[in-house]
Length: 113
Image 1 (cartoon, rainbow, N blue to C red):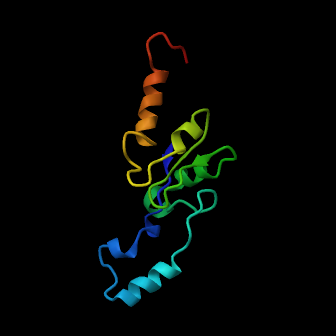
Image 2: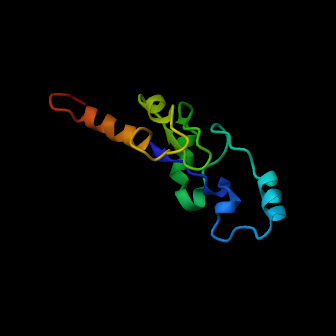
Image 3: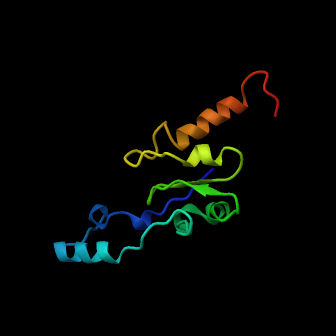
């Protein structure tokens, strides 16, 4: 699992230097690209190229959050990327917390790799 963030898709009203007028804000929101978990590329300058490689793997799955998404491949990909709460995508529930729970399961005493 890797972060597949797209901070460039965040709300312009929350930028460090937000638009100065309501008209500018409205125009930026209208022109913003639509997020698609299957096709929107990872913001490689800020996240890194490896995350984009993982996102493009044939079996990879990606969470649906338009700014703070995660991509995963492998046996737990669906578990890690599905049903992520929109209002709190970095919480313990999913996907970062889910990753921690799968690591605990994989390293449980008596479990063989």
